[in-house]
Structure formats: C-alpha cells, structure tokens
Image (cartoon, rainbow, N blue to C red; front, side, top):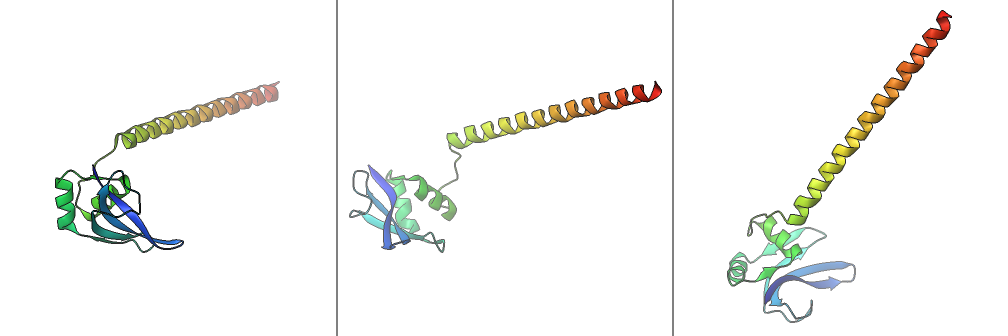
Length: 127
C-alpha cells in the first residue's frame, strides 16, 4: 500500500519535512517513490505539489494523520471529524455539565446553611 508521509531532514533540532509517497513497509527516511511537497514546522511554511498529490490520492494512497492535517489546511482534502474527536467532545460536555451541577448544589447548600444560621441568630436575639 502507498502511504503519504513526512520524511525528516535538516539539522539537529531544526527539522524540516518533505511530504513523500512511499511503500507502507519502507523506513521513515528511506527512498521515496515521489516527493510531493515540503513542510517547515518552525516557520509553518508549506509547499504542496497539488497535481501530483491529487494523482496519488486518486490511486488510493493513504495519508498519515499529520499529512492529512496539512492537506486539509491546503484545501486538497475535505475536513472530516474523526470518531475519537466526537466521543472526546461528548465526554467533555458531560463532564462540564456535571461540574456545573455540583457547583450549583454547593452554592444552594451554602445559601441554606447561611439562612439557617441567620434564623438561629434572630431566635437568640428575641429571647
């Protein structure tokens, strides 16, 4: 299977990446079938060979997650929501609602306890 992946190059701690098409079994920095673009994460510079990328995608090449994000930003692929994102966002929303209910319950309990202490203070003054 053909994969679209990033191939690292550049100095130590100053990495840049080439977007390449290669076999899924080949090493990360092995010899690619074709170079399709360039990405520099420090400057966010991205250059893509759109025609070659469209050709490879039409042939069934599968992009990695990082490459998919670059292609979505470049407008070559439609943004798709991964199932993990949907589940994660639903869990976050559920946690927010539970936290809000807990805060409201604590505030209500605190208010009731202050009202009760005010009532007892009034009772002692009347006596």
